[in-house]
Length: 187
Image 1: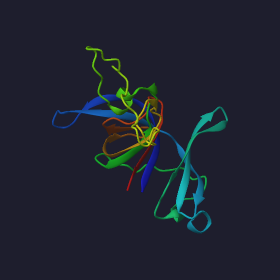
Image 2 (image 1 turned 60 degrees about the vertical axis):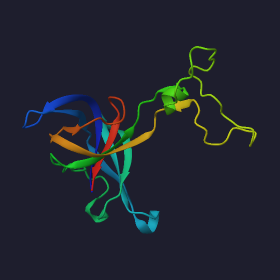
Image 3 (image 1 turned 180 degrees about the horizontal axis):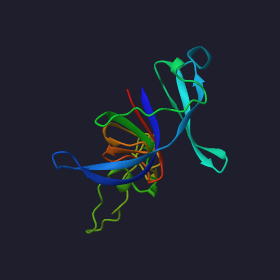
């Protein structure tokens, strides 16, 4: 499994060899180290834990710690720098935290239709009926207004357009705001 941690910078566009425009997201590759190794007999599963580090003066500050499941744990040692071995044209999955949208109503959150604005309509942006005679309560799981966003989102099958030593260009949109730390991996 190939993986990296990156920081979302912004979106832009590039031109391919045929002159077509491709919308891409620019990720800054964060330097990462192996911080722990999880084994099947001790932890119940095999994975490595990596952390992205940032140097502040003489100290190293941890930005994010993530786990990735790998086939061969013996290839990694604690404290080892993670090598990036992605290539242009490779398909990857990207995982990040979506933007927070605060307290949202049912129209924005679930795509409900509006109520009538004229002829005595009093429920223009309200959900309408939320219950019935039986069972005399609001049923669990009812779609209602509430907190929206700040969810972990995984987008699969995105293409690596270009890779440098410090940036990666990935086609399409990636979840999260600019500056968010993103997991990129492929099998």
